[in-house]
Length: 139
Image 1 (tube, rainbow, N blue to C red):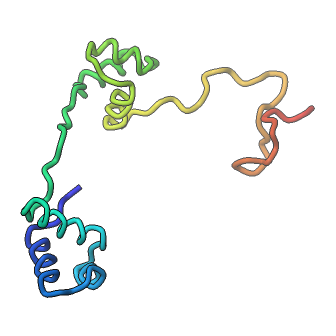
Image 2 (cartoon, helix red, strand yellow):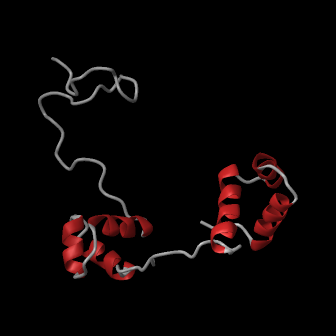
Image 3 (cartoon, rainbow, N blue to C red):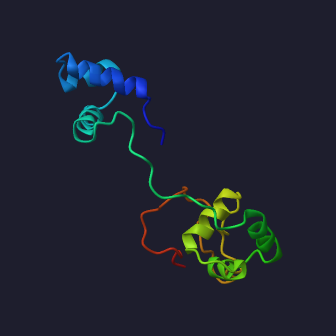
């Protein structure tokens, strides 16, 4: 998220100093009323005009090229297996996000063979939910 410029903040505070209402200032500058109040509050309480400093850091623990190589070597590995092979401490969602950044996705179709006894879907039916609770049609 990008912070509003110092110039805009100075203009908003100048409008407050001239006696404009919060709603009029927000409409004039195209910002929210809550943001205009927070800018004024920050100047009143801290004497500062600029945005609050960002906290925390976003570091990439997972080497994307190594992860891509692991997936090529074993495409059916689970997230936990990939994390173990990487040898780092991270959450499974971090591995998932790294795979998504690489453009890799999970397998969406089951690998089981189709039923030889009965069809498991209607070929002539509409796409989407049919409103029925059973997924296998009655014979």
